[in-house]
Image (tube, rainbow, N blue to C red; front, side, top):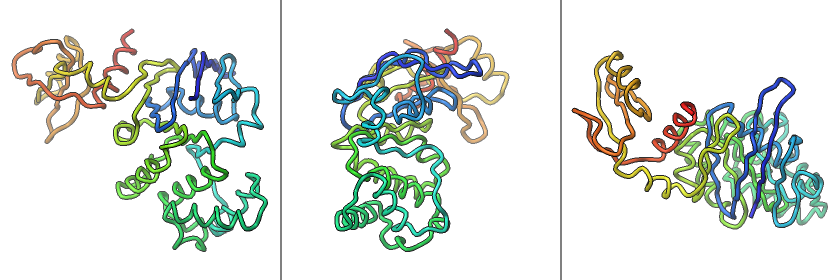
Length: 292
């Protein structure tokens, strides 16, 4: 269990990135949802020992991640949002080098670990290819391979599928799902589908504050029979609904606006009840926080 208590961070610019965030994160895949600028990357960097919080603690099985940085790095696997590689190095050579840095000094053990990870991430056939020739998805899979070195207890992946095409995204999500059974894996993202497909627990943060924590299915139950939708033809009609109702989101469907509204009963003529999805949960919490 990763226990985060009252983490707070304000940058020198005055931006309050985290405002007393507390979370209890069990073994398995945990989704951290939030828009760009919500504070997700700041939280990930603090857990990865790259930033010092102004206040608060984070502990994993008795280890203080904030104060015991050297010990934390030994049990940490981290794939940051911007993951750089040496473009002229072969994948197998760079992974071997990183394994040495992780403390795997035995040549035999290192060879076994590196080959196993390249197989696991489906990069074996491209192991001798220079990393500069890898696609975006292949680089992300290599990033997971290096994050898995030395059997980490905590794995952090920050916006891992941003920019990937649908096929590479599916490969990457399948890979993540396979590693998130016996360790704590935090998936930080603004893509709702990633959390829906992978995570048994989740949290939503915005403007440095925690808005929701729990199981996706519990959040959906709370919105059952309270989501309504209506197709409107004009911007003026959509804007009028936004003024008078709790609009969750709007989507273009065939050139017209589908307006999704939160209401305990039918909000008016033309609305039909719609099954709630995780995107409704996400946008409802964000819009509620903005109005408060």
